[in-house]
Length: 409
Ligand code: AMP
Image 1 (cartoon, rainbow, N blue to C red):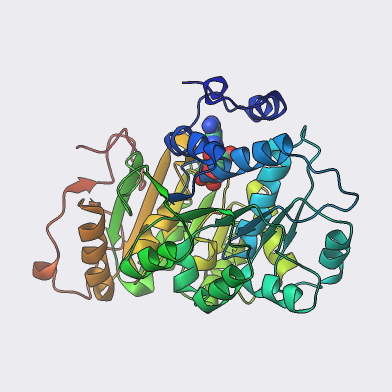
Image 2: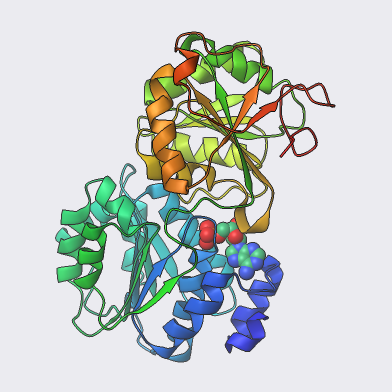
């Protein structure tokens, strides 16, 4: 199936072509017709599935086909998303897909001076992308009115819950017109999220691309059992492999992220950190450098685990195993996006075994253990180690790094 068969109008088709999109991803081919018809939608989709275009394309088409001719544009579509990075990325997607539509967009998020945002709002926009806190703030200051919103999108709803935004989200919803179209997206659907969805959508069509929290199948996943104190050395060892052009490394804490960056920089490996203690500008800069491959390693806390879209990112390294199981799926979903190759490596120390077991239960899959590496686990009785399919990292290629060529399946 091609985009043409989804009845997408020419100005949008043209920009999709320029983006290099020819075939809609499953969430796009399922969601776009539903949204174009005007139905509410609950979309349950894992990361990297093309979810943004699944809502952005039909929104652009609806607004374009139903143009208003008022002097000052009113906010006719609102997208609320949990993190600043996601908000910026969604606006970029609207800009790309909508570049021949003449529609206008802006993005608002916290942590930066509000003046440029209020200036943009003053001139009027058709589509607003926002994080919940700044949106409410600007609504309270009278810069934003939601009374003309025709299509509302709540993105990454489960993440909103994790980040404690549910209260804010409810307030935002109460300011929306009763008559509207609502699109609700979440990677997972725990009961609280199902309840929240119920309060937002009306007779929704449910689109579920893959079972919630299933790991992207094409991602190769490996685990190294290792003592906590050797993780830096192992990371440096892995990064000797020139095949790793860039890697996104996840740590559990901000402090941990900064520490890993220092260790790598000492070894002349270019690395930057991205986490909540960094100023917004510094975070954007770090991300831009990484995307441009000026920085080889980006060390992130889970703030970056969702939605960060780095083209051709092949390697994700979990320096620490996440203690929230779903986070694993979101972290590794940064790689293998839109059908590309992906490899996820996790360092697991003795204390993290329980987290690993939970993750394997969630993804319903055993992660391959890499053996024969220089820093085997000593601080945990081996008899208690979970039974895993094992591979030897010193295969034909004599590399520490397992890839498809030296993994026996
Ligand atoms: P998303 O899940 O929306 O963050 O999209 C993940 C990645 O897939 C992004 O890099 C998009 O640019 C890309 N993408 C989305 N839809 C398509 C498509 N139909 N064909 C090729 N790439 C796509």
